[in-house]
Image 1 (cartoon, rainbow, N blue to C red):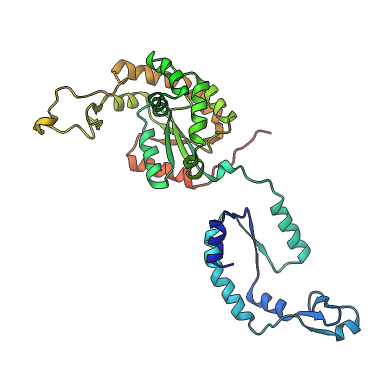
Image 2: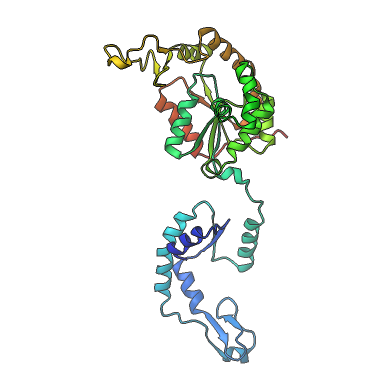
Length: 344
């Protein structure tokens, strides 16, 4: 198969689950091809070395089965094309030694093919970000979207969008949003089910933050087949998170966000049309007392979430520079998950 043929298969939606490659040295291939013979009377195939006939009369009727004069060219052509094919299907190629007995080779191939298929959810990233507000979840989600094209899904934003769209579910949620109370878990799960099942999420993968906040919510997420395959806990202290949130500011006209320490709003003078008194202030719901309540509420359920996800949790030290934090997040995404140790 050539690279063009492989691409043609993909264009027509043909994606093999496994590709078994029989590896052998050039010398082994030459000896096998040159030793192939057939009975010119019965057309029965034999091999001079591996499967010779026991009947002398049959042996006298043997003729070469294949023209071996161009075997070196054929081997070189195969190895040339396989470079691109190997890169195209690197994750599903199974390499077997082709210079072993046929019975052993067959047993190994059957062993690989009979293994249960992997859960399709593992083929695309399903990343869950846990941590205090202010731990950098949105920043990490945006960087993952930029670098890997994952779809960032913030539960709070999703709820507000649904309310604005005035869908049936959004109208039901609006009652709770207007009353500043928690939207029932069943409604949130239904909303997440719909969003995370959309084509962009299923093809590219997603990164979810803002949900779950309790063990029960995490269980509900797993029960509807939305279990994450990477759970990243952005670790930062309660006081550090509060300090970060208390210096955040937003421009209510432009929506621009600022940090009084790292990225303060521009100083006057500014153009006359932009000089609006008091328009830069704390984001909604981020008064100092509300920040304290938000962090305390999260801390109350943090341990039970970590306990529930167990070995799936990967701890990230989020009290560092953004680039350093993202490097650690990235390493957890590209490396294999640690194998869980199950108690006997």
